[in-house]
Length: 394
Ligand SMILES: C[S@@+](CC[C@H](N)C(=O)[O-])C[C@H]1O[C@@H](n2cnc3c(N)ncnc32)[C@H](O)[C@@H]1O
Image (cartoon, rainbow, N blue to C red; front, side, top):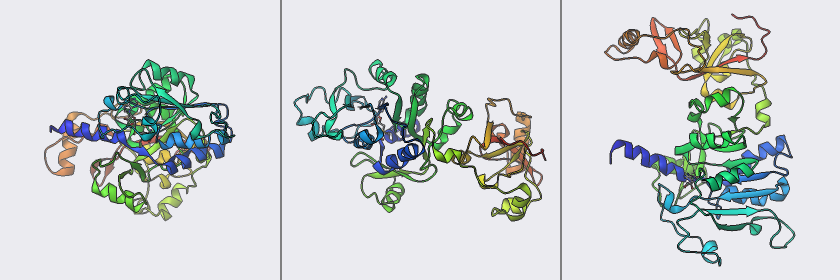
């Protein structure tokens, strides 16, 4: 298989990762704790789901009354349209239902809705879900699912990872509330970062940067290391884990309003637990941005009034009450923050000096510091500033 096909196969395989009940519960509980009425009177759409057994559908159906939901809608994508085939078998739930149609089951998506106590047992729960085949394959981009999106107040799912950007744009263009799982790297996408900068989207309350376990289709190939790691976390069998998945949302939660406890610059240079900070006389200043390099989130000085370059993982701790996001150290320079653009000649010279051989060091891709006589490109950084500007610039 050609390399690009292999990468594609891997990407689309990740599209069939199914979220654990506990992860959904932890995250959604954080929103409800912050605002007990967050879901009251709301229509929640769970697209890209497999509602017969999805934990998203199960969780919201179980909590329908407690959350005061108005309507729950859950849709699935037809097996024939999926890129990654996993040996589809209709569930007993479907085959036992008079609506079951063997010509439709692989060709059409399904829709499950929950609004009222259909069974008359005095409570609204999973048993009250009603379903039918969709007219199309359940593609979130179809007019049929778009209509459901427009009807909904909040869109919640773990969308296919390979089309995350498209999915997020689909939610944002309709101006909906959202809680979706993605990859931390998505923060740096040019379609995503501006939303984060403008506080239109932020990271969720839980799970960021820690292992999230996902179920995979029965017998799916899983990297042995990931399978073992999932097993150590208590999920044995058809499971995998991702270390860099996170939630993206525009629902408020308490963690966003907890300021990071920080030390002053002077104290960091004296007492930081990072020897890279403690062993220095000052923080590095970038050569190509008017900002200092802060390689660790917990080494952000509490009293620095200027711009600081911090790791992407800072966003997991980001409180918009404490900090303002100004941009990123990046190739594109979306916000015109670069104070210097390196020529090809300078990139070649820097490579030779750093690695002792011919090559091109892409100095324009991030922040650059001058360390022991060598230009060093640091990892991707978010450029931030304290909101409280009482401090003078150093
Ligand atoms: C990462 S899985 C998550 C499933 C479920 N939301 C969960 O978390 O357990 C994404 C699902 O979206 C489906 N899917 C892929 N492309 C889709 C599309 N264009 N429209 C709707 N669903 C799609 C995949 O087949 C898969 O079932």
